[in-house]
Image (tube, helix red, strand yellow):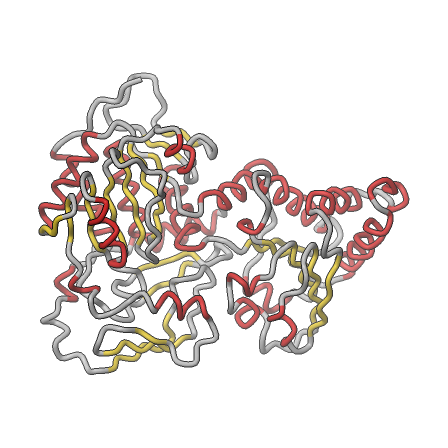
Length: 471
C-alpha cells in the first residue's frame, strides 16, 4: 500500500458520517420528477470508476445510462428496481422490523467465538465501521476477491513494486505490454478511459494471449501478439533471465526463438519513453499467481535501471482495493487478518494476518467459523454454498438477496442495504490505488448504508460483550 493511498483513505474517511435513512424516505421523495438525471456520475461497479457518465433515475426506481458502451454497467443497473425500497428485513425466514433484526444479529456476533466477515463489498465508510465491529467480536476479515488480491499483496510484501496511474498511462506511456489478459473482457471501458482520444503514438504488445479486440479500434496504436501460446511461467522465467543480462544464446534449452523474441521486446522497453506492464491478478493461473506477479515486478524494476516503467494491476473489483486500503490504514495489516476479541487470552496477538489460513473457502471447508457476516452491497453474490446450515449467517446485502436469505430459514438474519453510488453517497479507491473517488447517489431509495448498520451493531455488541475466546 502506498503512503499516498493511506493518506487519501484517511482524508476521505475522516469526512464520512453515517447515512440517515430518513433523508431518503418515500415522503421526502414524493416531489421528485418522473426522470432525474445525474451528470458526471461515477460508476461504482468497476474499479476504473468512470466519472463521465450520465445516469437517469426513472419514476419506477429503475436506472439507465443512455448509450452506454459498458455491458458490465448495464448488467449491474438491471438489478435495481421499484421493489428495492420495500425490501423487508428478515429473521429465520420471517419478515421483521429492523430493530429485531439488529438485536438478533448482535446476539449472534456476541455468542460467536470465531466469526468471519466475508464478501465485504462496500466503500470506505462501510469498511471503517465493519473494522470497528470486527474488533468488538474478534472477527476474521476476507473479501469476495481475496484470492487475486492476496496474490498481489504477497508479491508486494516480498519484492515491492513500481506502481503507475491511469493518468501516467494516458499521458506518457508509449509502450504498453499486456501480460496474459484482455482488459476489455472484464473492464469494458479500459481503452476508452486510458488511451482513446490521445495523439500519442503507442505500441500495444499482448504476451501470452491474443490481442484484445477492443484495442484494434484505437488510432495511433500498433497492436501485436507476442508468444500467444506459451506457458506464463516459462515466459517469465526467460524474460527475467534476459532482464538480468543473460544472452538469448545462453538460454537455448528453454527455446531460442522465445528468448530472441523476448530479447527484442526488452530492447524496445529500453528504448521506450515510458513502458507500462498491465496484468490482471484474477486472470493469472492459481495457485501460484503471486510468483508470476513477483516476476512481473522484478522485470519492471530491472527496466527502471536505464529507462522508465511501471506496473498497472487491473483489480480491486467490488470495493476490494478500497476495503484492503482502509483496513491496512486502520490496522497496519491487509485483509485476511484475524482481529482478536477484547477478551482474548493473555499473550495472544491482537492482530494475525495469514493469507492462506484466513481464506474464506478454507475456513468454510474446515468448519473453522461459527458465524458469518456476509456483506454484499454492490451486487447480489450469495454466500458460499459450503456454508453449513447450522452456522448462523447475517447478510447485509443487495435487496436481490432477500429471497435466498428467507429460503435459508433458521439462523439467518437479512438486512437490505444501500449500494454506494446508487442509494447512498460514499468513497472508493480507483484501480491504480492513488485516487479516492466520491460517489453521488443516483437514485436514493430508503435503504440504510453498510456503515449505518455496522455502527448500530457495534453499539449493541458493546452492550452484550463477546464471549471469552477459547484456545
